[in-house]
Length: 353
Image 1: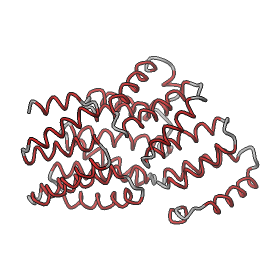
Image 2: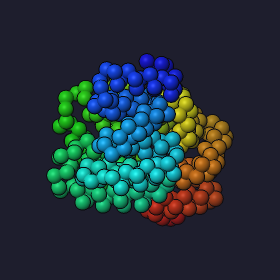
Image 3: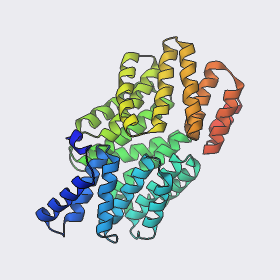
Image 4: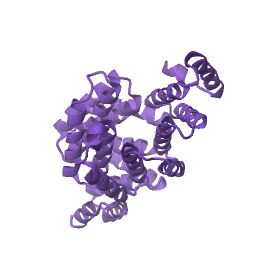
């Protein structure tokens, strides 16, 4: 199925469009295209999904499903690092949204854009304001799915700023909401659990709770595999490999996981994730006492982070190199990068090291 979908082109989309019109009539065509776009995006086929969502908007720009399609277009633009396009789409959406649900969705995607462009503190502050504004209203109960994504985004930004308590509280709340949703097998529920588990696994790794991190990332991986969530499967594999690398256990398994994740990231040009994989491979080499090779690979990762202007990655890689080598130049580079993304607490902690 995926091999067939990956060969999509405009001619095939035209044929599908005619078939959908003939089968469902003009009234339902937008909804069919929208759900096809969701399936393509879930499979990691971003270009095909983009074309499909654009068809929905072209069909009727003022329809509710067109707004939802635009949100997905913005997310795809962020994933493919087309940030100017993402901002353009979000501005288009902002002029048209009215409901609280769409306000939440817009805030979530906008903050995601800020995080991806390393304006993390600004994104976190906006999400914190949204969470504070809506948490005691009826909106979270009326729109639990959207509220979960806001909580997860808030937690993700909090993790990047070392605000672990806020992150854990948000993820625990998201877990409770998911547990009360539809029965097991509901695609949104399954997808939600995978996202929450991946973030919890990263949180526990950063807190040094490696056994808890491994356990919950294994759950994320199994869920993603079971339900064919290719876009999250690679993340689960990479994060589990990172935890194993830091624990020094099952290093062969960690390398296998990285190889599988890397294939997905290369095919979708996820440069930030590919840089993360370089760092994890370096940590595995360090654990194997191959320190010269580890340093060389970590330095390559740092160079690429600087090249792609990924300051969050630059900060963590430079800090790792500082701890490995004791070189003050790496320490200063890490401090400066942390300050640029708004993680002043981490910068100050390093200064005092």
